[in-house]
Amino acid sequence: MDEAQLGPHPGTPAPINLQESLQSHGDRLLRSAYLLCGNRTEAQDLVQETYLQAMRSIGRFRGKSAVYTWLYGILLNLSRRHARKQGRLVFEEERVLEAAFQAPPAAELDRSTTSARLEMALLQLSPAHREVIVLRYYEGMKIGAIASCLGTSTGTVKSRLHYAIRGLTESIPGEMNLFTAEGTHIKEPL
Amino acid sequence: MNCEKFQNTLHEYLDQDLDTGAMAAANRHISLCPACRSAVARERALAQALHHSLSEAAEGLSMPMGARQGIISALHAGPSPAASWLRDPAAPAFRGLAAAAAVLLTAGLFLALEGSRLRPAKRALPGKQLNHTSYTWTVDVSTGAPRHVFELRGGTVVDSIAEDDDGAHAGFVADPGAQN
Image 1 (cartoon, rainbow over the protein chains, first blue to last red):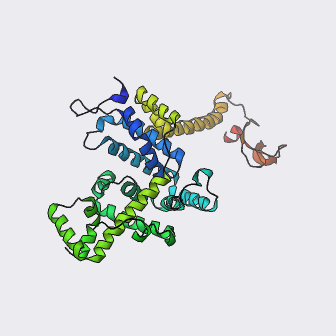
Image 2 (cartoon, chains in turn cyan, orange; image 1 turned 90 degrees about the vertical axis):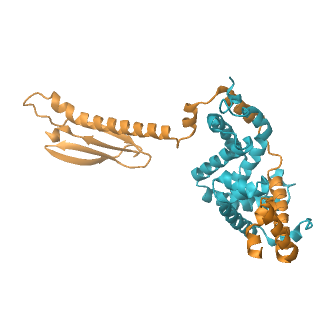
Image 3 (cartoon, rainbow over the protein chains, first blue to last red; image 1 turned 135 degrees about the horizontal axis):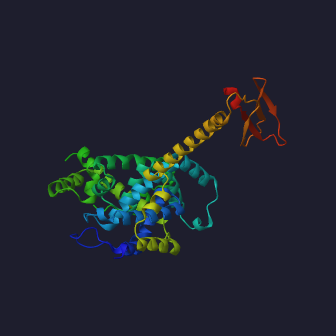
């Protein structure tokens, strides 16, 4: 039987097809990985290792969560391990400083200043704070789901979100109005 | 519900993860409290702005065909524990192997040094004095260290420095005769 189509257990609802998952979730995982680590090549490596580890541990998947959530959990663990290996705090600080003093690459010229600054500000956060920002505001996960994914309490998630937002606010100039309702076109629906 | 309790459950309110009673209480509260209503608006605006900016930051990223094919090939090939620990130097198997290699290397060096001391004594004929028997190891180092040569002269170990042409070797002479 093809390893890419192995099911977790004989009694489980549906076998996981990792190859199909790669087609449907691969790019989404890659973008999240990029936001978590800030480097395209490393993000590709993380996604690749995510699928390889998923294949090795497919027998432990119980089907209680969606396949994407399960893969995302693996990606988060790998991302944390990677950050620890790299001595990420010093490295990122250097990278952010480099980015701040370098002209933006041609590919980024058409990107809005807000996104570019947010990307750099995100890299200045600790990995734990960056995780909750990406999970909450990029992936759009609920607080309970984030807590479950990270193996922590909802209180911890909300606390990390609070400090992460504070960190972003301090890093991004106020005139960009990213963090004020007035700076968007959103009308209060209530 | 008061402001403090509402603020504590703001995220759950936005996620609609409150039970029916709590949701009704929260809706009643924000209908009467402009500050909490504003907090809800700020959080919604923040969520939308951040989602937009983060999506823009990661926009256009996709797995290259080569990387995608590499994953698919690996998935079809099946799990490979050997490849796994080779890829990860922090893996327990890798650490164990490295430790074993270090022990073997240390033991080998120890035996080589001890063996070089003992061999001449074992081979010596009774009553024969070993004089000026020496073994030299030269160790390449990247520094410009001078070469040290130790010699036995009339029962005295003499340390002399012999400069090489490039001055880039350090060496020493073991004198098993001095042990006898």
